[in-house]
View 1 (cartoon, helix red, strand yellow):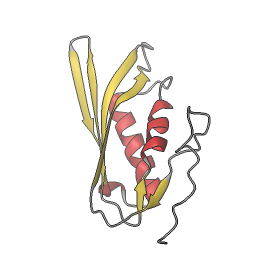
View 2 (cartoon, one colour):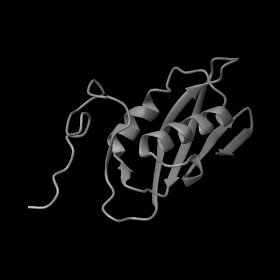
View 3 (cartoon, one colour):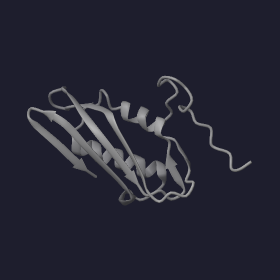
View 4 (tube, helix red, strand yellow):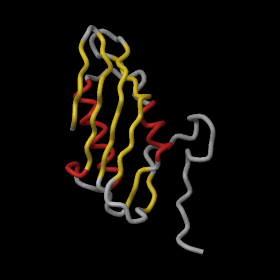
Length: 125
């Protein structure tokens, strides 16, 4: 049998109680990965109103790839965090790059904040 897969904390378990941070697995040989979620929610740090996002995370992996359920739970962790769209894009980019052990320049995060007050914001880090 081939290489064994790592044991994941979140994958294969219902709910979020098994979340242990972003998890990775060995890169099977891909050069580019794009993950998209429309379930990212944070709050405006000034008004406390919910900001809803579509998040696109694209990365050029070296030896590691990002496990998607851990990413889903990671994104859910921002639900009550007060943060501006632009700062959130940078934070996610930097944490994904650190987890994947690649330079931040090899990770691109685009957040499209759904319209609130008639304005849609798109921030890319």
